[in-house]
Image (cartoon, rainbow, N blue to C red):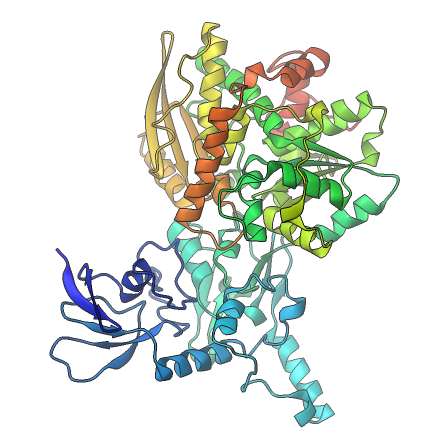
Length: 604
């Protein structure tokens, strides 16, 4: 049932009860909004704690209800559609109000754009440009105040500025916070982590952690993808990378994750889902990287180990079922912090990032006459939490890690721009073959369900000695946030569950606590859509953008010749010359987390 409404004098149909903002956006009207975000399905700015509704006030419109005589101004994110309603989206008064509100939001950090990490990638800045705001009435001009007053202002700003860089992943700068509370909403309502809160009202309002303590969470980074300014940003490792490539004594080896090649183009105004593998590799060579390998190969290696571990668990009952995937560090942190009783269910396999780092330092480097200490292992990841993972207790021994530097997709985009590389004009280049051949099973790791599907393809071969006739598992590839299916392998029936988003992970774990674990194998990715929606991916992001990235990843699965991890010739060579076999003593030493590993790990 739809009702008749008017927007700017024209007739439209809309569902009664829908937010005005949603209806306007669905009909391609531009309405600025800094509190709302496409990831928030309800198109409201209110979170469960009833804070932060209609905060930014830049989405104001004029409405006139049926039988009313005059228009009145209201935030479109909070008002709902009614029969006979008339809406004005823009006139002189609305433009003036929006500009005033934008200037007020700029009060604390206008003039700092040039040096800001989010310069030209900031929603507040973009809207200000659209409304031609080139002066700021509410910011004192230094020339008009005394040196004494200027110093007092400086101290006041320094005291107000609450910079938190205490964790390895996320920087928080409250001076650039516009109190939109997007971080509160995504963290509480979607990820169920609840690390952020909002206190106070008006000028005294503050958005941050409770009691302004250092941020301690799962570092999934979803807060940084929805933040409209630079209040929440990734801790940059660009300077570390530039230092490494300039050191003639160091050999810099870079690996790139599956989802990077379908998202990096967005940093350079290419359409979402554009596959830029060749340009990405060429750009990395231009930045000074010595060798570039494909993390997809390490994903193949992960499948070899994980499929073997699953089969051992089922046959030997050596560890509890269901088995949980271990590729996502934010998921592992979530489990450690909230449900430690289920830690034995986690696969002992390291993530593809850490497996590739182990191969680089302990297989490739010695094979090529290099001292591992002179090799700098770098990864390009869609995930902010990978910065935590490389130095986490699971992946270090005697305070040493196989991995050195992690750059997110956004950081790589910024690095390319800093160096003045014309990304769009680059000729394609290929991965270095030593560790650069991968299968499409590794490629689909970038999307939710991909790890599970890739594992089933190889587990089937390990159990039956035969190959699957049909490699796609459509039930796993579905659009639902929680998906279940069954896989028949010989006389074994596997019950499978796949989910993305930590809020959905919590639902599954709560059911497990109640004894409702009706599955054998569980894949969890912390971010919506999996790695394609990772916290380090380009912004803006939305369900539509993630869908395009997923389609691009799955299109590679159909076109690549090698589609099963156990058919990768480099993987076969690595086992023949280095690891012996999946689950071997050496594989356990280098490819599995130490706290579950019975063998002593020693740095070479």
